[in-house]
Length: 227
Image (cartoon, rainbow, N blue to C red; front, side):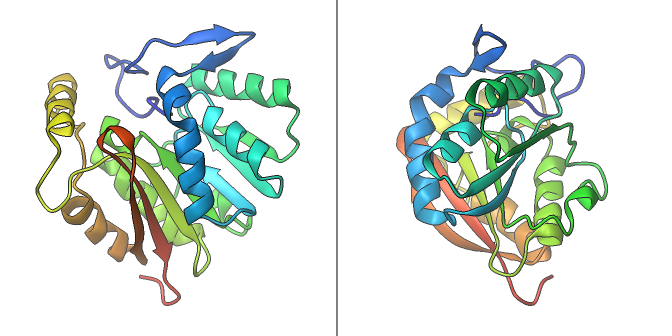
């Protein structure tokens, strides 16, 4: 969904070729995975409430989920100008009045979440972002989740991951290619890289669902006690 993220001036804003119709951009990867991601979201996340998406990319995932879940409110964000233009076009085309944004967010910035505190954010969503961004983005995302989510609020990730130092062959090849593009990128190890950062922010691993093409849907939950 979201190949856009903080990459620096010499790195691409997308790892795939995308088409555009009326300003709406279409991601081939989202076209392939949007239904399975939506099914995982419906199984693992609340069907209503207010979700803040980090790295919305073309905007397609949020549009699909709002279309399927009529009580769901969605706030889009992305640091890429073209991505935000696409999101705006999708919102205009669909006329969904439960959409907010898109906001220009760099979640590696300190206290990026301040505008969202007290805004009834009940969930965060981020698909295909943290492996094509510096690890500071993952750290900032967890810190923001810990700051804005209520107890029981959930953070949903979709993408490739390693587990306890092991990685599927396809993900290993992808990891090598990502690190060739940027030393700051790479497939993150769920247990070794992310769980400790989550715990420091007051979140715990709540669910992991295997997805096609060696991907995972991963959910962290905000604890009652906080960090």
